[in-house]
Amino acid sequence: MHATGRGGRYTYHGPGQRIGYVVLDLARRGKDVRCFVHALEGWVIDALARIGIAAFRAEGRIGIWTHDPLRGEAKIGAIGVRVKRWVTMHGFSVNLSPDLSHFGGIVPCGIADYGVTSAEALSRDATFATFDAALALSAQAFLDALSHPSSCPAQIEA
Picture 1: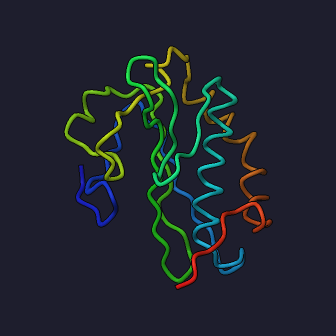
Picture 2: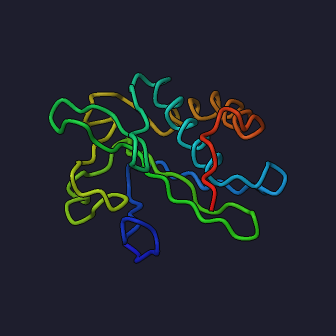
């Protein structure tokens, strides 16, 4: 674990997680960080759907969520983004088959009221290759979302 300046205080990357770090120049894509995060969430949600996991955004919570029969509403994917000079850094992590006990001392994205789940805990046989193929099939929709700001949430005026 490494201390971070983001919501959950820690970033955990371990065996069984697919990590995707996305580097894009947002100056060429409308300088809209909210749209980037929204599109990134959508990309992961679409890829999870392709492997049989119904995932969703949750109002007021960052990340990717799903329903787990044992844990209730639970986080299956995290978003951690930094932007410097309009270039994105970091990205997402998706729990395919991690040891969920590793999350015992972590508050995902600063949200303490919900647990963490994985494709394996949901009885989905999601290998890295299978999930990577699902991400590849959904990549164009991710890029299209960035090119069509009307599909993104409205920017908040400062």
